[in-house]
Image (cartoon, rainbow, N blue to C red; front, side, top):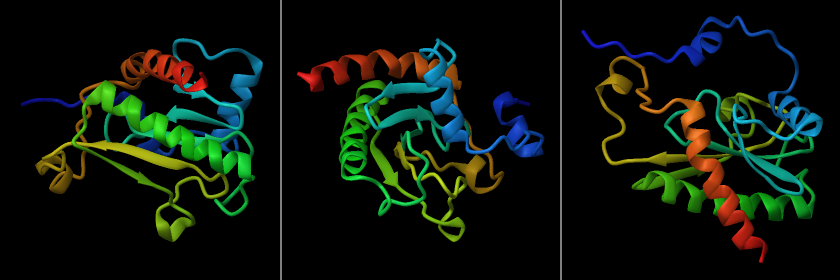
Length: 171
């Protein structure tokens, strides 16, 4: 029998993680205290927004583009935040294509609990790399995702690509 290990999901599935407030604001505060270390899931920082790996990914490379400011909707974003979110989505697409060669990428925003939002009051955009056949029997029958790369490996793969692409985009 094969075993699938995903220990980082234990807090999520058991519900044992304490509610400390907004996870995206927590990530922002950690960036303010010190530059992100090698264990950080933040893969790129902009002026008004940042890009972070999803702690509970649908697929390897599942990214989130998040404004630093705690705000609940696209309509509440400033013009600068909206523009940078769009720019970082394009940058994220480039980084995912280079890092993973996906066959497609889902890009989406879940506004409100009925729409699937897990974090209700801090808007963010999901970018999920997809491959032909990535919905297999484990997902359909076992409601289990198989992720071959852990989050730290994903971060290590993506950070240098974002650094290079971000520098090139700056000029």
